[in-house]
Length: 80
Image (cartoon, rainbow, N blue to C red):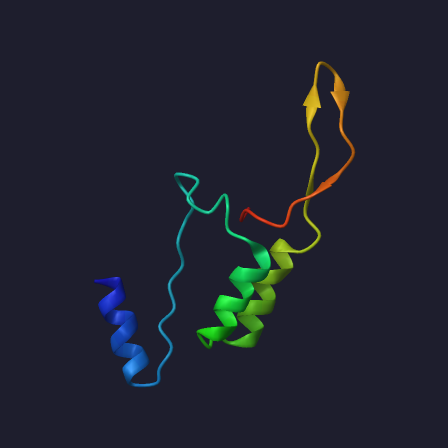
């Protein structure tokens, strides 16, 4: 149903927006640059794409094993 609404909006040269919640970890592997590229390609308004990008840029993680913590590792994928 969602895809039908999206395609109908696109045929009319309109934008159809949806927000999804990551309840089951579905977005753990979303690559940040690709996600922003896809948003722009689908004509998501620039302020919204920039807002989403602000959540994704300069994200890092660290690993801890047996009390030893790794250096900060850039995290270019996964949506918080």
